[in-house]
Image 1: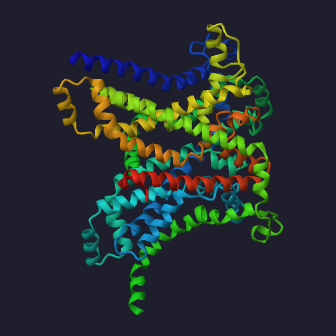
Image 2: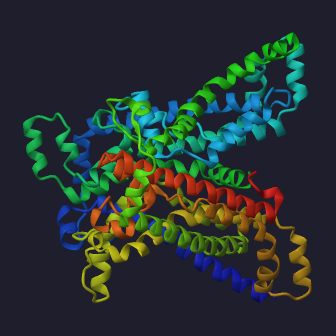
Length: 295
Length: 305
C-alpha cells in the first residue's frame, strides 16, 4: 500500500506541476514579449526566446508617464477610497441587522438578500446613474455603480457580528454610558478586524481590476483608470500618442513607436503590481474564498 | 403607542447607521428593478421615463422575431452548461490531487499558482490571449503551428474556434477558485475514515472513490445547483473582452449580457436592450428559485433560503 500512495503522490505532482505551468506561462510570455525588440517580434512573433531583447517599449511608456501616472493615481484613489467607503457602509448596515432586538429584523435581511436573487439589469441601472444621478464622467462613476456595496458581503459581516461579538459586551458598554454609535465603533469594529480585512481585500481587488464602470460611464480619458487605458489600447494602440501633450519633436519619435512590444509592456505595467503583491496576501485571499464559499 | 414611539426612538441611532447602506440599495438595486418598466414603454427622453407611452409587449415581439434572441439564448446556455460540467470535474481532480500532496510547502505553492488567474482582470486576460492568438505575431501562429507543419489561422475572424478558446480561457481562470472550495471540504473530512480504510487494505483510488467523493457530494451538488441557478447570466468580461468585441465572431461569442450591452451602448436601442434585460432577469430569477428549491429538497441546511 505504501507503493500505491507514492504512485498517487507522483501523479499528483506531475498533474499539478503541468497545470501550474499552464497558469503561469502566459504571464511569462507577456513579460518576455514586452522585453523583445520590435524586429524580433515582427520576424518570429511573441516568443519565449526572442532573437534580441530591448527596453524600447518601456522607454516609450516612460515618455508617456504623464498619462500612465495619472491613470495609476486614479486606480489607487478609487481602490483606497472605494474600499474604505465600502467597508464603512457595509459594516454600518450589517451591525444593526445583526442585533436581535432591532425592529423589522427579517425585513432588513430580506431587503439585502433579495438583491442577490434579482436585479433590474444593465439598462435601467445605466439610465438611473446617467439620467437621474448624472454620474457620467465623474470620479464617482468609477466608485459607486455596482461596486460600493455587495449584499453577499453585508450578510457575511452580519453573520460575523452575530456569532463573534458577545451581546454582553455591547450591553456593558451601554451601562457605562456609551451610545449605540459609540459602542459600534469603539467595541464592535475593533473586534471585527478579521472579517473586515477579508472583505476589504476582496473589495480592493474588485476596484483595482474594474474596467466595466470606466468603459460604461466614462468617456473622458482624464478619468481613465489603468484598466481603462489597457482596455482602450488593445484596440487602439495610438491612444496614448493621441492623448499626450508632448512636443512635436517628441511626437515625431512616436512614428517609430514599437507597437507590438508596447502593447505587451503596458499590460505588464498593469499587472505587475498585483503579481508582486500577491505572495504577501495570497494566504488571506485563499482563506477568504473558503469563508465565502461555506458561508 | 408612546411605548412604540419610544422603542423607535431608542433605535434611532442604529437606523442612522443603516441609512447610507439602505440608500445605496435603493439607488443601485431597487430603483433599477422598478426601472424594468421601460421595457414596456416607447422611451422618449423628451417625455421622460415615466411620461413615455406604454407599448405593452412590442419590444419583446421585436426581440423574439430576430434570430439574435435564439442565438444569444443558445450560446448562454451551452457555454454555461459546458463550463459547469468541465469546471466541476476539473476542479474536483485538482482538489483531490492537492489533498494527496503531503508536503505543505508544495501544496501551498500549487494552490497559490492555480488561483492566480482568478485574481487578474479580464482586460489583462485579453492581452494574454492576444499574445497567443494575434494573427501577425501570436505565439500559436508564429511558433506552434509551423512546428506542427500547419497553416496559420486568423483566430480573431474565425468564429468556429471560439467555443473552444472561450472554454479553455474559462477553465484557466476559474478552476483554481473552485478547487480551493472543494479542497476546503475535503480537508474537513475526518481522517479516521481513511485510517480505517487503510487498515482494511483499501487502495488510494478506492479511498477516493468510496470516501472522498461521497462525503463531499453535498458540496458538489450545492455548488452545481447554484451555478445552474445562474446559468442565464454570463461572465460579461469573458465574452466581451477576450474576443476583443469582434463583430465577425458574434455568432459564437454573443451571449445575453453582451447583446444587452451592445444594444444599449453601441446602438442606443433602449427598447431591444431593456427587453432582453428583462427576459434575462425574469428567467434568471425563476431558475434561481427552482435551483434553490432543489437544494432545499436535497439538504435543507444548505439552501440559500
